Amino acid sequence: MPISRVTKVYAIQDAKIAPLTSDPSGGPAVYGSLIDVPGIKSFEISGDVEVKTLRGDNTKLATNTSITNIQVAITHAKLSLDVLVAILGGTVTDSGTGSTEVSTWDLTGANATMPPFKLEGVTPPNGVDIVGGDMHVVLHKLALSAFPDLGFAEEDYRIASFTADADPLIANGKWISIVLNETAAAIA
Image 1: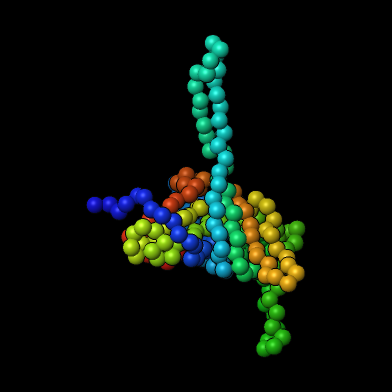
Image 2: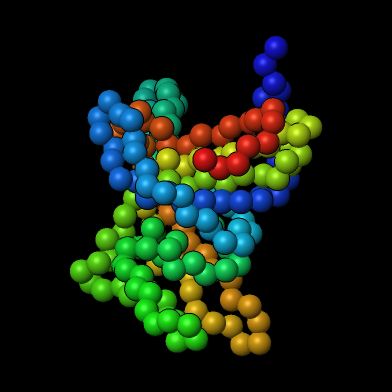
């Protein structure tokens, strides 16, 4: 008997990004290494629907709708230079040794590539109705839709955030997947 398709959704425990490196027709899509989104706080999905109404004979005859956009908004507690490279481009350079070590992210006009990426988030175990289970949400192909919120805050922590728009994969047409697991599983 299959597991229930109905569940509560409680909290988010982890989120990871993977650069999309290949999306050939007929698939499969290929992703780079997973990058942790540190201190994930929220993972919100919204979408836009276009409605076309056919009218004639002074009455409504038909309505057709289509999804025109799926968007995700992410907030996370800690800044990651590797996440910035995955969503914006740029390069990270490590230099120095011992107490003079430095890690620098540089974004230039030439390396601001806005690369496509996959994003996956997961509830904690028991964050769903299935005892010991979890729920994963995967957006298979995203592109940043606005520059990330970065910077500082006076006498407070600065929370990083970004928004991205989904496109269907060329490989299989997938935009978003929601997976309920009977046994909790790490993002892989």
